[in-house]
Figure (cartoon, rainbow, N blue to C red):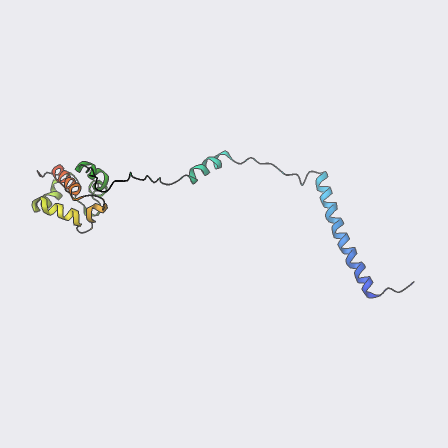
Length: 159
């Protein structure tokens, strides 16, 4: 017999190992197909997850753009009641941050005693924890004054 050199022996050994691994993998694959072990199992997604996902991706808020006001056009002022409902009631209805509650004659009494003009000045400029114009810079002085009058009169004043 002829002697094989070491390089040929190593090459045959590596080739044999690769073919053996591939053959075993092929055997396992065929065996799995025969016995149904590799079939894909179809699972329907839960209906609850689909309906919750729609609720989760809906917008949190919607933006509405106000109509453009022509320069020089008169803006219709809101009534005192409208301003109170839209802006002032957030704090004055519940008494947040020591705001006097609407209708509480005891907490409004000292304020009413200062006079209407001082109350309006404080509402327009802000005082202590209350921001100027109740935090709504779009309010006019007249709208703020009407809101002050509405809240004070509902709390025992006669402005």
